[in-house]
Image 1 (tube, rainbow, N blue to C red):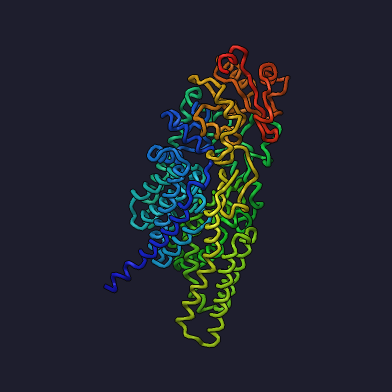
Image 2 (cartoon, helix red, strand yellow):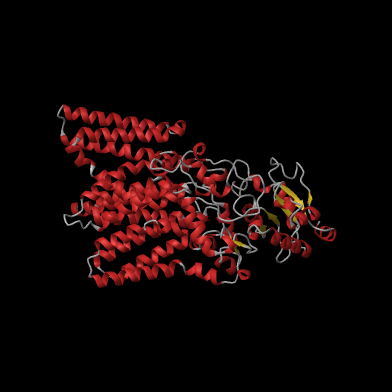
Length: 624
């Protein structure tokens, strides 16, 4: 009976960790806030297979989401099963987050033992970025799970010397690319280093395995991109943020190189004034993260997402390096997790475009290495007690510093940290007075775990307890609401809020014609502004100026045709922009056709956009 209890004990601990992870990811999920841009895409994808395959942003199928399809397909499948609700959109991420915790346990246990496996699962369960990402529909958590499964398959293939596991690894990594494109390739250098340096097969078998892996990876990764690229432009939606309406530019430029150098993707027909509070909408989040540098992941809005565990991950990296064999053939796990972690740390230290949610790409190696670092603390306590105690106290001080911007909301966490520090002091004094060693070890371990977990756990609880508002629904950030809210951006609120039933929408609904191919309104932007909100509230086609790719002549011709056909009547645009320049074809058409019908009762927001009626007398008469 006793051996059976000992066998089951780790799984009891794992069940408790999964329970905590599930509570953090599921509690008040309906209030979590979702990315309305992606949500509008899912809503539109449910209308037709054409919209589904090409991930169209709006029901008219004029423009596609600037991401690959797999994450959105999963959300559309969930909406088909459970109905279209905003909490349903996050279900695939919640499931992926819980499965990732489970996989992390088994992967870490296979290399480092049960203790490290449980610690790694616990780190991932409470990591603030993993919690908030799993509660959002931005599908970074799905990408993280796919890369973690790919890593597990690679390690299994190397240990068993089976090519089929390399094929599975490449397949999973390719699916990750079809979820968030280049984000899924962050561990690719680690995969390559692990394979080259630890594969024990003969040279011919190594070359065959590498060729198989690369072939499957390329074919799977580029399958959907190639299908879109081979489709005639007139038979598919416009590629949003793909220069020249090119899916290849979207893939390798906007979602690839531009993430590092931060350049604008392509010209747009934009108003002279950006939405209130946003100086550069395309790179909005860059203004809310620290400047590039090695300190970036340890401070500010990135530090509070993952920085709590980075010192321990660095400690685990040191121990992983010391575990290499004398012949300099590192163990597969040590090399894979270490290289993946270093790659992620370096990338996010220099990337110009670093949204907090992107840190999910390095969550798994951070958790495993942090667990390895924690597992080595008892040994360090025996060898270098004073240095180890000082380091743990330093971690407590660092955690307190990270929590400082939201100190008023986290008084309980500061109390727990103070208790842990006092316990560590008591352990040190007890050693000086030669107290029982077993009691000291237990007290020291509990105090150390408090120091390590209380900060991120409190930060995650604060995230769950206070639903986001405004643009925080678009870019998920963990922490109390007062800390994580971005400046207000039009369309950032939840579709269920009172602002959705505004006078503009009621006016448009009552006066726009419901014709096949007809549009509720034309707006300036797909990602920002009210386009997504209008789609979600009415499920009506909404035309955005993004479909014209900066071509004013095309915009003038298209808008003129739609208005003449009776398929478009209203435009919601900023007061100043290319459409107000009489020297252009767009400006000539707009100024000669459209009338500003804005009134304080109709559009109460401070003059950011105005509503224009572009219908002729005959159209106006039939649609009023």
